[in-house]
Image (cartoon, rainbow, N blue to C red; front, side):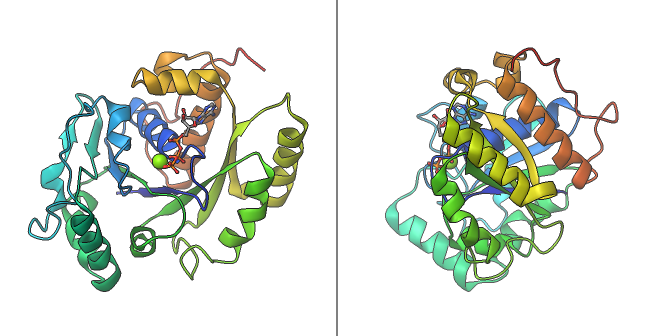
Length: 266
Ligand SMILES: Nc1ncnc2c1ncn2[C@@H]1O[C@H](COP(=O)(O)OP(=O)(O)OP(=O)(O)O)[C@@H](O)[C@H]1O
Ligand SMILES: [Mg+2]
C-alpha cells in the first residue's frame, strides 16, 4: 500500500493537478490507484470526471462510518477516488477535531484501503499545515512537496526544511521530496530559481515540470496531461516524476518502468 502525500506550504502551486496526474501515470503503468482528497475545496474528484454536482464524500460521515472506503467512487479503470465531499462548517470542524485529537481516527478510516494488496494511494492536501497532514505523518510512505519556480517558494523552503509544517519531519519512512512546478525557461527569475532549487535540493528534487498550457487545458477537459497532449513538455516531465516515485517506493509497474512519451518540445 504505498501511500504518497502531495502537499506544499503554498497554495495554487499545482498540488491537485500533480496528484491527479501522478495517479494517472501509475495507473497507466499497471497499478491500482486510489486518489484521496483531504482538501475541503473538494476539487480532486473533478480531475477524474466526477460531476460538479456530485457532493458525495467521506468527511460528512467520517464519524459514524468508521470505514471510509464505503465512500470510494469508481472511475472505470484502475483509478478509484475518495472525495472529500460537500460538508457544512460544523462537519469540517468535527473532522479536523477528530484528526487532531484521536490518534487512531485516520488509520481506522483508511484501514481497509491500507490493507488492500498492491493498492497505491495518492493523497492531496490543502495548502500549508493542517491536522490531516500531521495525522498522516505516521502512515505515509513519502511526501511530495510542490513548489513553484519563483522567489516566494524559495522563501518558504525553510518552513519545510526546518520541520515547521507539522512540527516534526513530514515523513518518517522514505522522507519528503520536492517537485518544482511551472518552470518557465523564458523568464529569468524562473530559470534562476530552478537552477538554485536543483542545486539546493539535489536528489530530493524529484523533477522540474514546465509551465505548459496543456496542463490547464487537460484540467478543463478532465483528462490527464498525458492523454490530452502526450507530446507536451509537461506530460514528459510528469511521467519522469511518476517514474522516480515508482522507483523510490518499489512500485511494480507492468513493463518494469513507467513509460515516458517521446519528448518533442524544449
Ligand atoms: N505545469 C503547469 N503549467 C501550467 N499551468 C499549471 C501547471 N500546473 C498547474 N497549473 C495550473 O495552476 C492552477 C492551480 O493548480 P492546482 O489547483 O492543481 O493547484 P493547488 O496547489 O492544488 O491549489 P490549492 O492550493 O488551491 O489546492 C490550475 O489552474 C492549473 O491548471
Ligand atoms: Mg489543490
